[in-house]
Image (cartoon, rainbow, N blue to C red):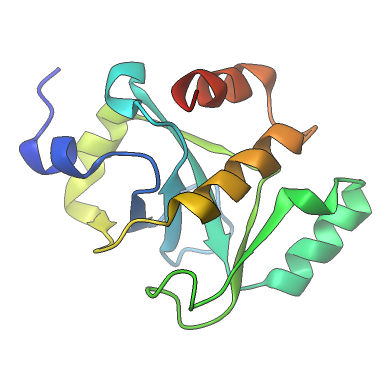
Length: 146
């Protein structure tokens, strides 16, 4: 597969992309963080989405009986690209084949800074804690981040 140079140099753990995703109810673009550490060789991106609806997500995980550790709050002081407190619901992981990222690249914006390793580790821990994320997805993240 011919991977464009700008994707090769930007794709790593904690990379944040901004784009629309068909699985979200909102047609607005969202921030997505790459979870796996070797997505170029795995050919599949595993990502979590940021949302500013922190209270709604907290109610959602409580109602579903998920551990509160599966919700990771991110403040603007944690990630300068944010203007308001946001969170990642670690009970939902989005898979995007690398080939799809390449085909959609003109509509995807890479954010200038990556998520810090500390916040990324909290998200990975939340995904591991989640009972809603498939074991095969967790296995990819485990393999990628050991």
